[in-house]
Image (cartoon, helix red, strand yellow):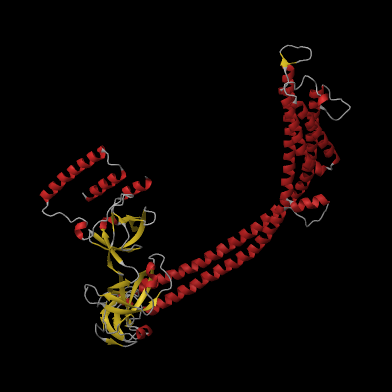
Length: 606
């Protein structure tokens, strides 16, 4: 019902109070009244509204339409409970040196033992029936190690032969590469000749286009003069646009001058000028086409007029000339690119060919590469040989290890006593007569063991501090902790150690705190550490104001400057179903929005 009331108030704020809205509101209130009466008949008590709980809602602002509430300050600080574990620095375990069956136990809980004292006795290996099996196993390992030596020698021989074969293959490849080098030198001459030939063909195509235009414009290409003036152009051409005649004459003059410059240049310079020359010729052909488009024509032959067919033939000749010069330019560029690609791949060889040098040290890239690979392969042969010898020596050493393990098994078969390496008091016994023991299983636990750490602190609490509280605790600080099943008595411990690094999996910092020596807490007992952050107050808000988003909790608040909703991340300290205690970047005057998220989003989009 509360949500429905809030939605109705938001609806009224968003729209004007028209008769339709009033009718909708009256109808909704009737439904609410009926629902309220029905609910009252079922339950004798109605849950208190927000105003009934001492947290009255603020009046809605006319410009927002949101239902707002201010948080209630619960405490000027925040606390958090972290699980910790007690570590005893004067506790140690006694382990057997071999596996076996317990024949007798000599000490029990509460007994004081000294370093080197016999605390239990095992049955001999022969009695257990395991000695022969263990000795056989160690003997099999020695035999396997000896077999591995023979395998390593065979692998070494094969690896050396393979490396030698690679040297022979590289030598053959080097001879082939030197033969290909001669072919590359011949290709330099062939492709250079092809560049020169295609360059001449491109210039011939330009000259042919020039002659074609001269023939179209003047009716002949045998004029004694090299230039075409507008007066020289046939009177029938460009009558519909006299500007095309002038433009063509100007383009012809430009092409003529460029040809003179091309003929005066050397071959290398001509290769740079030919693209410009082709462009000018093509431009002149386009201007010729424009002039022909501005030329009137008739269907049947008439004196002083061109026919449609004659004009069409002229246009076709212009198109063919364009195709010819562009094709010639493309052929030249292809030849030039091919020659450039070849010379770029082999710069040293090309430089020697260009200068006419016969220096034998100048080699192609492939010859240089294979020569380097051949040297590497020869070095690899020495490396492989050395590596395989090391493997053989390693397998031989494994034979020695297996032999030592076999001899150790013979020695262990008679080792029956479990000795205490420490002095102390027995606190736990993990073995019994007739039971199996192994080196990985503790036999006894001792306390009051004198160690270097126990001189500093007999017992410590170890816990993981969340990384966001890294600066909340320092070495020397006091912390409080609670024992299991005891929420009344609090005890203090002094922080003695703090890890300088954060665990990337748990995102915590390991902290250890010294417990008073008078407290007798069992080793590995769980305790609850209470941390208080004085800088972070705790507030109480309605539970439904806290939303879950991704991996954290958020609330919606109304920004006091923009009057728009925004998200604030919070930490939930406790929650009883109706109200939640939270901490975060909020104050007592923060305006918290109680409306549903979809309503808030809708208002943001309006």
